Image 1 (cartoon, helix red, strand yellow):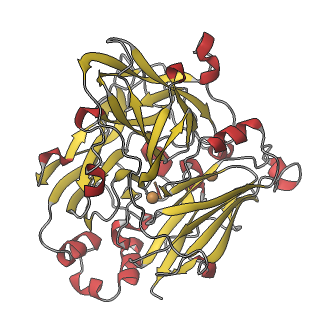
Image 2 (spheres, helix red, strand yellow):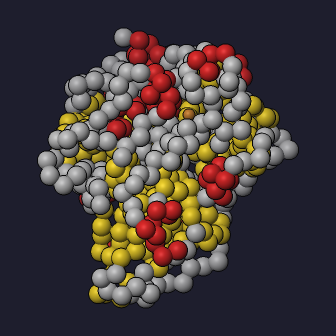
Length: 513
Ligand code: C2O
Ligand code: CU
Ligand code: CU
């Protein structure tokens, strides 16, 4: 099978001796002790996403075999989204079983991983097979996640319910006294569409629909419509994560209350930022503190979302009334409880970033996002196979690189084949690079942005370490990164999952210098 052959090519001769495929080999290679060991299974199941008939879904479930049993739990809401809590420095072993009727593999989004552990589609396993992950948690404290990454089936499988949250803690974070325990509240935001019997509706086969991206008319939080949770009247830490296939959200609090942003994709910001509104593109995470102490017991604080499709169509429907109309619709409500707790004051400085890669020594690589011949391409290319990598997609270990993502909004507009698709190119593309946290250096719009683009841009949190960056139509965004260790093939792609599956994804190869 080609998967095996690809694996051997990458890891070299040793693999052949060990034999038996990736899982067994790596288990043999890895240090024998693990601080946390778990079983994780992808399987069909059902959950209460809407009131009434349960929805047939696919889900991850598992159990802790060794280490702290609290390492694996379930989010509230529908109860089908797992939460994996790890500490930096922990050695982790995960026996992943595929009980789905098709191949899959797990990618640990935002983590820094040896190549064979990263969930590249070349490692997808068939129904009934097991893949053993062995890695050391080597990222800053923060909110990460895991999801399937099989070739051309990622959008389908995530939509079916396969999403997990991964929270990493470390000493720096724990010294801050941030709200913890029941005050540390992950909110996974995902839109879905249902038939009359509460069953999930997927996109059909029309290429045009895939270009537009999936759009649901229900915005679920932690898997459930109309999410509510009672919380003590004090300061809470919300981990906002957009786990939607394609939709981008602008999020606000009811009553115009401010949010104190403390973190983004790659963990804590250096300094907190006050925002009225944040933008969350697919796969992005933002951590905020909200203060419920001014509320009366029983009073609610709502999270309002205005939803945008990749084509910048407003998806917020007419369900909202009166004053909420402009602010979006309520997707989650925190109800203030009787209990009042004092909150620890937030320090001015939250964290110290690792040293930045040198801008002066960085080489620049331009990645132009455009539609060509009816495909969404990066520098004119689509995914070309498990091993394919262009010369310009090789990066040297240790060498600072600037990737300049240019969302070429005008190509294909009004003329030629782009017009044949009837849709031009004004699309949001949230670009993701595996295995690294990068810094956003600057953004530049080629045209005067309209008010929507302007307000989406204003809500982006660019000061943090990032693994996804939203690139608006007509925008160039430069990000700076450096690959410190681990060589081999990794992926970069648009995180609109339909775009990824259509081929808006490429390998890049990290080579030792
Ligand atoms: Cu979350 Cu390759 O992606
Ligand atoms: Cu990723
Ligand atoms: Cu895209």
